Length: 111
Length: 118
Image (cartoon, rainbow over all chains, first blue to last red; front, side):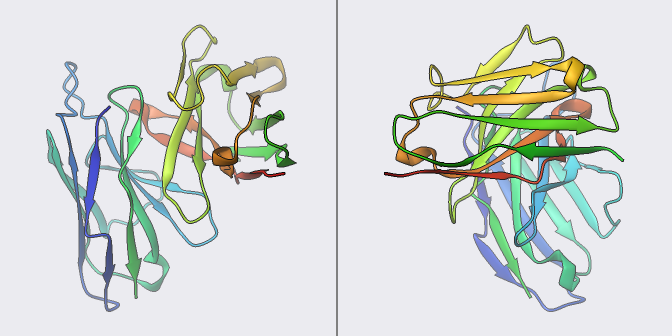
């Protein structure tokens, strides 16, 4: 199984300040087609997860442009340029390159 | 509006069975892979199962293989998860989700709670 490891486990950010979350996979997520099967999700308190970033760096529909994803191979980063109160929740990375799909353990963002 | 509405779930004794349903609207279910993800109380997300558009390709996590069955009824736009031989460790909120463009879960159901307890 591909192991996904996020850091940090939690972070506290002042509104308006940037935030960054890292995720490392135990093997490359680059498919032979050239696509990288890596996503970021946000689960707000009491809600279902929502897709933020797919294929490593593509923002999902409706996601504010303060969210950006970068990285390749085994190392990925989610950046929030200016944190807002609504960004509170748990962020998860996930790989869908290989069955079983696997998630990171989550990073809790607090204001 | 594109959405997934879940039903089923509840309290069941160890060894019992439950069937979860997930009804799609706003899109054609058969055009997409679909999956189930669960979240135990206070824990992270865990992938459970996946089915392709015509039901010919199905995958399960090791911890449910042989006990859970994923299926779909495209005429009813509904995805199912039949859960048998339930264990305490299966207690979780179960989410259905659509596998959209390039393998990401782009639409999620509201979740349904399953509690396995005597």
